[in-house]
Image (cartoon, rainbow, N blue to C red; front, side):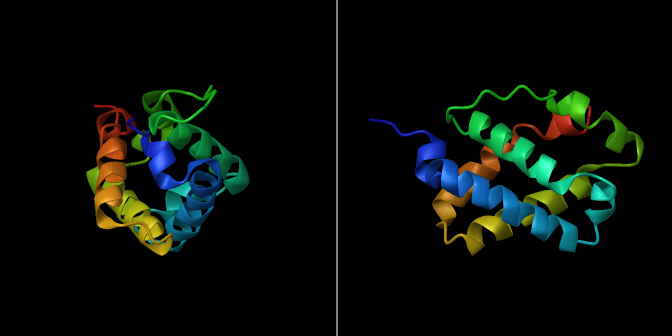
Length: 122
């Protein structure tokens, strides 16, 4: 039986923990932290957790904006590939911190990478 990426990661508890750690890593990263000034981090953590649950094949009722619509304003502020690369480095560091193996991390990174063009409005 094939397991979803969500299940491979450890389900709800792990995805929620990863979302919280991810924002800590993002806020420490000077390359991208400015994009997260003046936002409700807890609200964004919940949205991120719901979004990741959805794209990883878990039980999600994600009702948020599309990635393209959600990032229009930050693209106008200069969001580009280098910023997405920095975010991906934060994702990688988060998963390492959670003790996930390289094979699983690569699957997660590939799944998130599928959304790069939408995030950047391409």
